[in-house]
Length: 544
Ligand code: ADP
Image 1 (tube, helix red, strand yellow):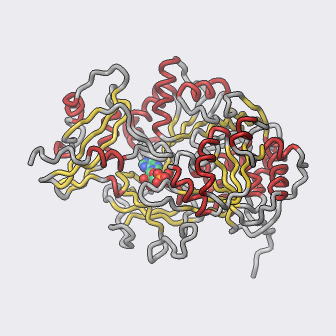
Image 2: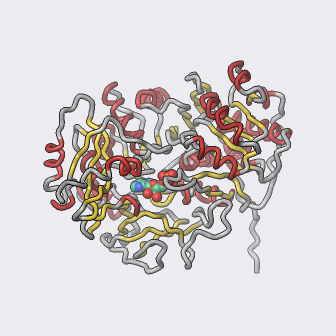
Image 3: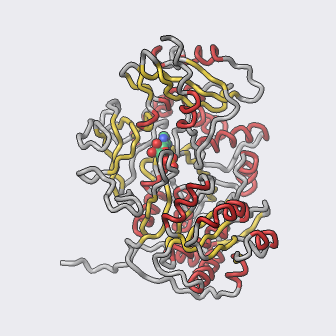
């Protein structure tokens, strides 16, 4: 017998409808590409999203077409992304930091019919235009701009395009498993691969992301998504903010520490989200300016492991509770979040601090298991010690990559994340590494993340990456590539001494190499592959 409750498909348009109706005057602050501030609210965002949906329909874009955005976090991008997904088109958020060849590949792979872009990215568009013949509409997310019009004669301007439209659009109803958005992983090897999300997966992910044991979001919050909307939907915050009716501060292109500190202080941000490299520069800027980041209640760190020293600084200096989360594009992105349980209140301060370093446990909706080999199915114990390959399953986890017939799952239906971790009985996951970054020394594994975390605890180290260098006797040995704090005179010997007593002797790096900067990926992660290409040979010829 069927139940007798209403059925409503879970659609992204319902989020913006809700925010417009019940949080109409809640503020959205947006930094424009030229640095000026625009103030709007959920009602205006919703009305402009409807105007945009009308404008896109007038361009003959059809249900299921991909429409790309190449933009910073700003209000026009927010309006456009609700317009695109809400009207049944697929919002392809492009990472502008990809190489031009990769941009061309993903735009053609997605068969994007239109691109909405920020003025900043005009040079990118003009450089690749000849190679993306399917794109028929170029829309600049600005009012009319003579420079842009000169460089790209066929361009349309967002403000002009929507100004003639009425906010009378009625969001269509369709199957909740319809594709809503497309995001490519940065593709550290080979071509990027697309994750195609559904309206249903997005809504369920959003419910879970808002929970107190996840990002703990509410109508009381002022959210600063530093993580870009092109990096897995800014970890879902624009959806979550609409669901709970939170205020948002969209930082535009200014992601330097000073700009972020200013935004936090000026707009009383309560929660901000970003990768560790962002927080590194924010902490330096806060120290310099003397800001205490008074309103910041939570900072969400994910994308790579959160160094323990960073967590301690936020807690002790800024009275801000770090939420450490683990995820990936293929998981929409939320996989696990570190929030304590009631029983942890009994733990000592040190024990609690140690617990908070892990990547946390899954919310309802994601299941996690450890297995003994990549794509294997033999389950390992959840004892907090055994290390294995992390596999996930759930309502917002990928089944197959965009355009690929074959599903990407193990034979019993799990997605292998490529990460290596231990997991305790409560599901707290401790990621040791990405499988490809582990260092194999004489048959024993060394976690590069652990070596980096220790180095980052040294007050004179600004950034550190541990890589596997080829070794004639041990196969691989760890080498630390490090950036000093400004004006530091720290030496290799100082750093090697610093490791003493913190890990087993044989795990201490063989060498420390100081560099001016560590190359970062499009999503702000250290490009260890590049470092391995450059420094992977430094131990050959030595210690033979
Ligand atoms: P890519 O970096 O390839 O573009 P993602 O942005 O989807 O892909 O990154 C996913 C990967 O980032 C995870 O598989 C994991 O290795 C790493 N990662 C994400 N969050 C954390 C975290 N909190 N701690 C350690 N590693 C993390």
